[in-house]
Image (cartoon, rainbow, N blue to C red; front, side, top):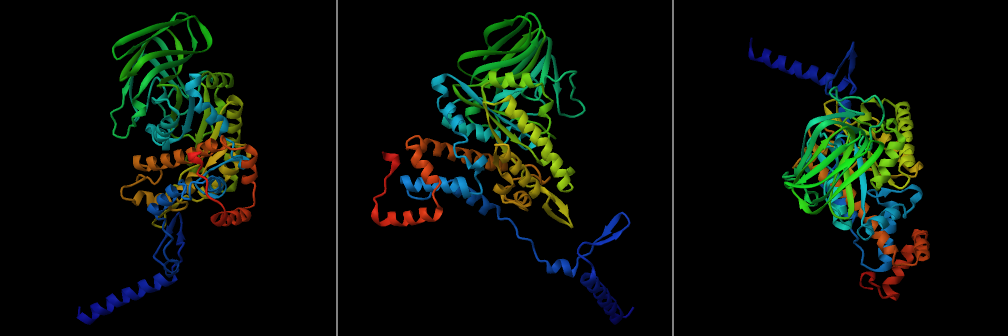
Length: 505
């Protein structure tokens, strides 16, 4: 073949490829069960999608929690007013009621005086497995309100945690509402506050020791109070705690079809312990806590979309939450339902299911404040690109509307991340903030999200503290003022009034 023949062949190939590029539709051409795709002129003209700048998003979120105005009384009120009403990273409150968390903060601030440990129970899907996100919130709250330890755990742990080392032996059988094919199902619905329980038969032990994981916080390692919630126990059920090789009091109980909370108060922090049991009982949870204050429990439910709680015996759940002094319930769900979301109808069906769960918690925990955390962004491949799952923004907005309609607070994690397309950039970030499945956060990503959640909640506490020092009618008047009038008054203060620093009053 002569040289010019080769050249003509190459040029003709480029010509045919150019025609294909120009006329081939961006959505491809159906061919039976397949879709033929080709880089198209139409697709090229669409240009590049706007890419989420993760570092900018993280920086803006962090700055939104900072009071950047001067520390005067009026400017501080203005900061809180703006944060509670227009900051996209805020916790959305039902009816914009800024006092929504007041009863919770009052209890937590008085926990030590009242010699109480109040519980925050964080239910969620696999995003919070291994104590991710929850561990950050726990550390931040315990730094403010006191308390320590990893909180409530199951007697039989299926997935390791960054915050605790745990094992068991003997006659313990785990029954769970949700799980893989190895999970047992009970013949009744007494699954308890953790959506699972362990049946103790004969001799059994539960052992634990403080974590050596690099991601473990310091507060979680301070354990000085061990409790166990049991129910439906047989006559003569016994439990003994050996803490740091020092045997504590043996507790023995008569037969009881209801629930019993047993507690060992220890003289100081321990590094390891073993609970030895003899007899029959349903073990609903083991609590590893510290001083008086707040305990934050991680209850990760892999594969769960948050629709299983109504299957738990209502009197059992109600009695357990009251005995445990649970004063805040966090529900973090939505992501696991995405694969079955195909339009508005499927979202509507899911909202009906979630509505029942929220109403259930309001019935079994009337003393608790409820916060719903929506799904994170999730990425899937489309035409060779990673994009947000179709329907996820609508799902997020629907859950937010449902929560607020039920007078439950809502934290919009999807938009805190940066909205559509953010998960793909979390994966590309250096270091990665999410894993290659484009669904789950890495430890560092979970740390960022946990920090953002904690900071947002703490801002509401800061506002609560400020309001305790002011006449309530003045706060109400300011919060209801027209924004334009506030701007005018702010301008006037520059020239007529000397700022008052309320921190020094």
